[in-house]
Image (cartoon, rainbow, N blue to C red; front, top):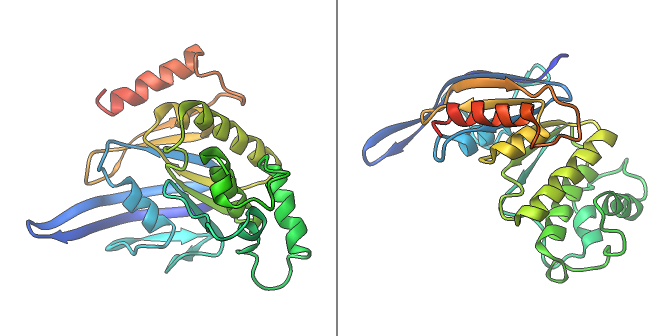
Amino acid sequence: MSAKIAITDVRKGFDTDAGRLAVVDGLTLSVADGEFVAIVGPSGCGKSTLMNIISGFERPDSGSVLIDGATLRGPSPKGIVISQHGSVFPWLTVRENLMFGLNGKGHGDKAALADHYAAVVGLKGFEQSYPHELSGGMLKRVEIARALVVKPEILYMDEPFSALDALMNLHMRTELLRILEEERHTVLLITHDVEEAIYMADRIMVLSPRPATIQATFHVDMPHPRKLGSPRAQQLREDILKELGL
């Protein structure tokens, strides 16, 4: 498969009162078109900074990020970010939130398209509801639908389910995998949850403590749906936790 995302020798640091703080240190990574890659690492290692660089919201000090072979110089229309912080507009209905990103022509009936993606994430019947009328899990579905409705080639996901309870977290993982079976996207997931990475990703990259480099790579050669209690999943979990020093 061709490289959808190619990161070469990326370095990033920030000035502090104590001097320059190195956060990402010579990191190289290639993500194939249609691949689901998860990145895990210890707290404070630079995962979110790396995501900001790859999605174009921060520039590296050195090195390069290529999307489809072209140098990334800012946020790309080919990708969209789903974060842990939420991005639903409280003054808009579910349908209006989903229509918000459908700018320009070429989308056809925007209301019908918005309603289709509301149904895809299990929100049929809630198209006219406002965010304050929805549960936390339903709000997360709106965010995912908002990302999918613009048909991005790349989904950048920065701990998107971390604020959900365990049961809803598992439900949203399963829901996203179901959608990815129907629609092709390249996915880059930042997570602190090793089991989440094993459950969803094709490949897992373990980052070192700050400044971040890629410490280990694991290929998840298990078909979906995956059973986290299986011997293979448990061995992967132990191996990854060992790399994380746990």
